[in-house]
Image 1 (tube, rainbow, N blue to C red):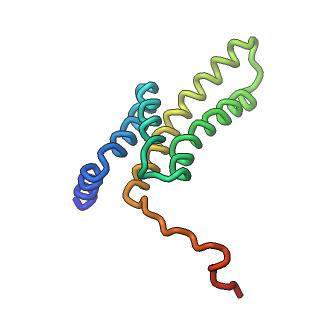
Image 2 (cartoon, helix red, strand yellow):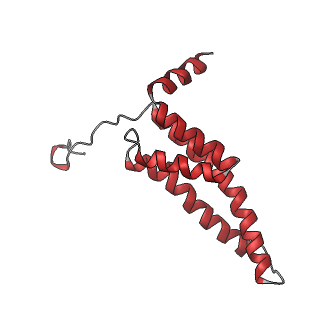
Length: 129
């Protein structure tokens, strides 16, 4: 019950970011062109910093590319190059759906915690013993 009110408060406070996470998550799982629209919105958002954008948008894409390559490598022998491409396509599609939902979940989690404390400069850090 409390989670529902918290999600509604987040949606009212950050409508653009919530729309981006919905487009990334649902679009990635159902219709990938919607993922691209959500990714563009997320990359232009000022709420998330560059680390959040890398983890939520870029890292899933890299994971799909590496995962598709691993599907080919560990997939065994195939009779033709076309069957390797088909195997990579199917593996990348499944992995993309999973990674899109994961990236959207991370970005939604980070929406409410977007203000980080600035790091102290190295010269002002307390000495370590």
